[in-house]
Amino acid sequence: MADRIVVSAIGIVSALGLGEAANLQALLDKKSGLRHPLHLQTAYAKEYLMGEVRMSNDELSSLLGLPGGDNGYTRTTLLAMLAIQQIISQVGIPFLQSEPLAFINANTVGGMCSVENMYLEFISDKTDGDFLKYIDTLDCAESTLNIAKHFKLKPMMATISTACSSSANALLLGSRMIQQGLVKRAICGGCDSLSRFTVNGFASLKNVSKTACKPFDRDRVGLNLGEGAGYLLLEKEEDAIARGADIIAIFSGYSNSNDAYHATAPSPDGSAAYRTMERALKKAKLQASDISYVNAHGTATDTNDAAESKAIQNMFGNTVPFSSTKPYTGHTLAAAGAIEAIFSIWALRNDTILPNLNFTTGMEDVSIRPATDITQHPLKHVLSNSFGFGGNNVSLVFSKA
Image 1: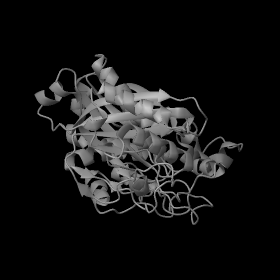
Image 2: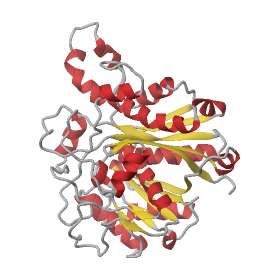
Image 3: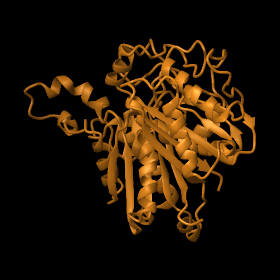
Image 4: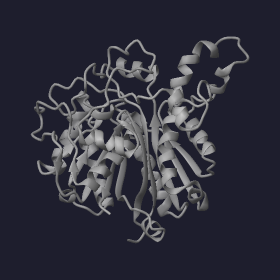
């Protein structure tokens, strides 16, 4: 038990809904959150399916007790605050103020969701107006700072932006800070909202699907973008036990690496993904045969799925079930690592293999196939992959408490 790090509270908002119950029920019902966006102002609104959170900014603000309209909070920050509010409802503000706390937040495009709507005002000669509230929100750390201020927390703060592995790296850093005695506990995760900047950028790469994505399918044509936020409270197991906390899972292993192969594509032989998973297992003191389920990165893009499936097959053969949950939520970018870590933990706690929606035909270069049905199976250890642009790879291992 010495110095083991555990997860003792969770907060989540995604296209599947707000909170644990809504998200878990959608997963079990195989109900996707992908649809044509209602709130994002984009020419692609009727063309691409996206994992958009169903609530408007005014509705998000109302749930937080904030005024609607241009209140100075970006959609990114509002989503994050709703997820963290769930953690606070479980443990209370005084608890988070009582001992040294870290808040490790992940983000990729900051408040672009708001800034892009006010571009013409920013470049105008106007010297007053509500748009001035958003002038510094493009910085990824803006959400980190405003979240801490809103909840009256004074933690050690860091903002991580390593593309799609950002919030997985946040969990890794928070765990290390606790183990090194810098803090007693850490809130770790990430947030991202849809923006025209993001949609246009991925569309220019020609890897966005107009229909629901099909991870690990031979006929996959690209990803669906999504938005959301996910956060996990980490602390030492002995501290959680001492306060009578419900230990959700043990955070038993992790690894991050960089394959330095290409700006947007992984090394095609899967060697980088394999190396990252291998090191995470070593950190957890586990063998490949100990893993019961793999929540894959599974973006449904040509290069990621080809490389990741090779790595999974080389590591586990045909013995370990795996799936991607991105057909449920879309690819939530910086939030993906934390959201999918939460999904992995739910799979672990409920002894349930989560299905890979929309799969029909296996890829030609590998023999493994993702799980496609809800399956009850005893799970002891699960592995969650998050592989980002620039070769930023992270694998996390969670074990049953």
